[in-house]
Length: 158
Image 1 (tube, helix red, strand yellow):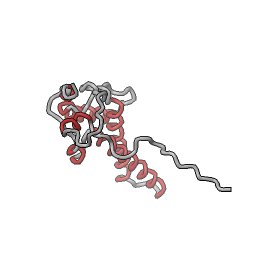
Image 2: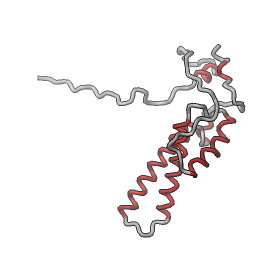
Image 3: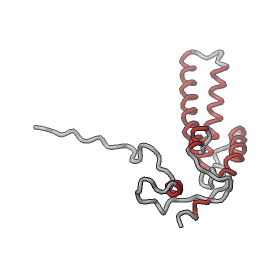
Image 4: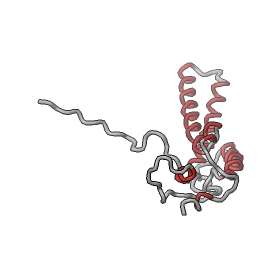
């Protein structure tokens, strides 16, 4: 008997490159001529609420410092609290584990490997989350913002 192997299913439906924002497609003249998403969500720009679990003083300071840079650029919205809090917390935890690697006196090799693995995970989390907020030069090169806190793309779709 011939049995066909079942086709592997994708675990994540939306793999690949993230979609380009509709407002940017319109500004470019919709070069792909594909239908535009006229119902794209546009969250209100503003300071999000801090998550209740974000209590570390260093994470709270990072929250205040980074939000001061992101808000005027319109890169922080009122619904970004959890993701922004995760970024701040990951940055602090990465710093803590890196500090313990630097002052590694008294740790055996297995403990150092575990600490290093945890630090690497926090670094990966921090990298992914920081890219969502345009915190690296390459991420910023992909963003198109104005220096106002108003959602200017609201008028483009009308």
